[in-house]
Length: 327
Image 1 (cartoon, helix red, strand yellow):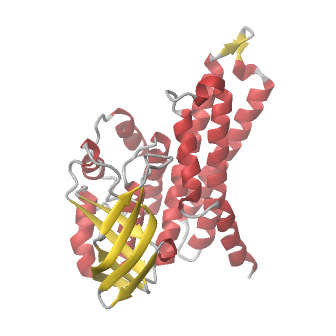
Image 2 (cartoon, rainbow, N blue to C red):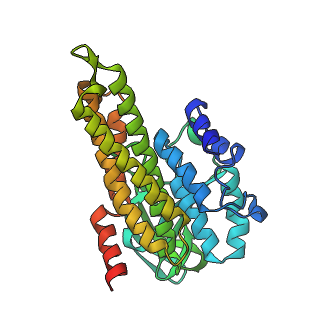
Image 3 (cartoon, helix red, strand yellow):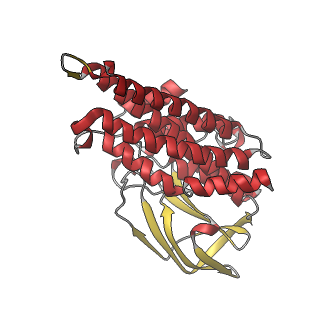
């Protein structure tokens, strides 16, 4: 499965979300078979996340599959599952999920009002990548409930990492459809952290590969720069961080419901810092070419930097871990 996803992301030019989700079957991995999925588990989803991070793919897998599909499954709402999960699995629907801490929203009966200032936008981009998407769903955890609502206004940001778009969503007494209670919000967010950690591990691994490849072919003073002790030490440190990040991400992906919070916090902290470090060292190994617009190195550094804030910085994950371990 890893090889199939990697090959698709590497070779499929003009790949649409419909092809990736439906033809490849990536979106339905953890969706039960009765709703058009494959009935696998989150570890399989994490492998796809890892390859998406490695390729810096702009496809909205994290928002639509990791977050939205998980939220719908955890909602316990049979109607929502029947209506939304098959469309997600076949790639005709994308989704955005808003958590309580990310917005100032309130419910008044069946009307939603307020502002969500920085939301990971599952609509991701217009054009050929998304030309087969028929609908977009916004799911909101608010006032102890999970609801579906259409924003009254949407404003997209110009972001540091254009492959991870953010938007401001405004709700002005928007009508909602209730999908169940919001008790699973923390678990769904932890699954998001686990998925992001896998993406970070994949991006860090690609940075290591790129740096090692360049160190072998770039010559200075008549020998490959990879033969210099300073470069060897950089690459060895990068390898340690990549392997440790992958272990942390896999542990979070395989964690039981009781262990997920702790493992997600560990992965969120370690994988974030490992990716930032390896992305920066990749630029250092490449030297001058590493800071040029034409080279991919800066794109990985931008993704690592934006990922470091997506579900909170490493310090926030460690604080949560400390509360779980020491109280």
